[in-house]
Image (tube, rainbow, N blue to C red; front, top):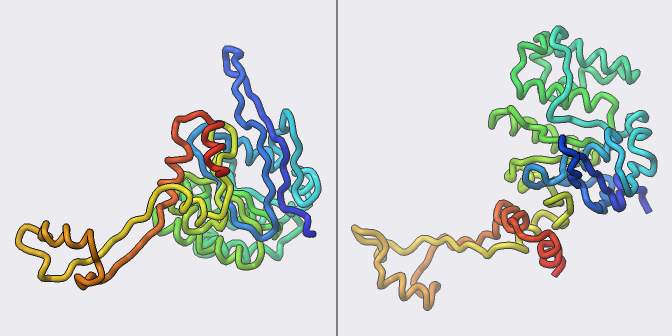
Length: 293
């Protein structure tokens, strides 16, 4: 059996507010991700996504439970170059150019051969001479992505990776990620852009109140919540000056096919509908019970 890319059991993390009140950010999370999977983490603000990601990277130690990345502690996997991350916030040196930044990190990893490769993969070749401070927010996110690829990691963890990118840059970013996934790299990403998870992730993990409330193939998550939508085009004779003839609509409810209905389309419920259903303000135990039926 292959060693899991990520294996976490009973993860729990608690913080204290300024007044000393405890807040449970992650509550008894079990998670196993196999090599080559593409997994989206979804959840409202405060759901525990970022804290979970921090524990997977060894940036935060759990109060309880354990986590292994390719069979070793997360910080050991990071030091070995098997794991990289693109974080939502984090330091870039404004006085460096894009290429100088990549070369500096490549030197630390002993991988100067990766500079041109990662610049191209992140779509930064033409921006190599630009100073970091002159880069847009989206371009800086792409630079972080390039830095994450320098050690040629087996696992890339992304925390809101396309924040600050416009639509075009976001599409280019995911094209690059698809290319990397095709090479067998494991990708785990937290995002609030539901369309990204819907389009890119083979598996979706939904979190709410620090717990996983659903974990399944993305298509199954969509199908489990909400109904289906039927869209059709009525024949020309059924449409008058004021729209579709009500009498025709009544007949259509009884029998669609004999009426010559064209362009019939049946679409599954959206991931957004599932997200809203699973993160509604109801007791977490109730959500978990419903998700396992």
